[in-house]
Amino acid sequence: METLDSHFEQWWGVIFFIILYGSILFFLPFYKKTQKKPAGAFFAFILAFAIEMHGIPFSMYLIGIIFGRTLPEGILWGHTFIKQIGFAGMYINIVLSLSGLFMIINGWYTIYHGYWKKVDGEGKVVKKGIYRYIRHPQYAGLFLISTGMLVEWATLPTLILFPIIIWMYNRLAKKEEGDMLNEFGEEYRTYMKNTKRFIPFVW
Image (cartoon, rainbow, N blue to C red):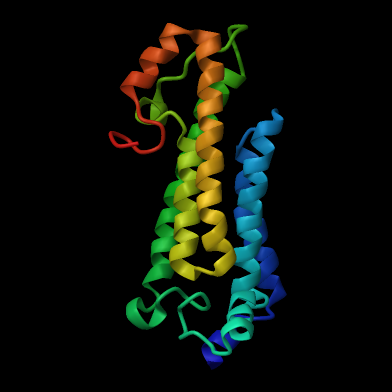
């Protein structure tokens, strides 16, 4: 218990992780109202992760109140499955978070110079770089980062928010694809046939 207790009420840690993961949102577009709600859900996910990891273990307290007992360490509190996999979840989170961050920044850079910047006076369908393989690398990157956070420190709020994030960004991706079809027509339709939405060759 001493190791787990040392995690809690470290509010500097809460602030650090909120800033660390929250900064990712600066690389996502916010010029439409529909893009703000999914970002809000992801930020709520970050808050739940940071507060339960370094602030107050609300999941543990809630389970204790409802069921009158404490779940084993690593089950909805503490490092996920720590007794089964040790700190492997933390290292998996690092790998997934770095991979997701690369996808987000790479996607942002590519789309900024290919579409948003509109150097030639009009936007164009971006098919180079990471966009050769998936249509929404930034959202796929968020999924990787969220998955890594769950693998490291899964709690009730994050488990509830995770499928909501997937649903909201999948819905947003479909909406954006509709906008692109209206703007570019058959060119974007052909691009959709040759690439997957989030996972290359799969989904």
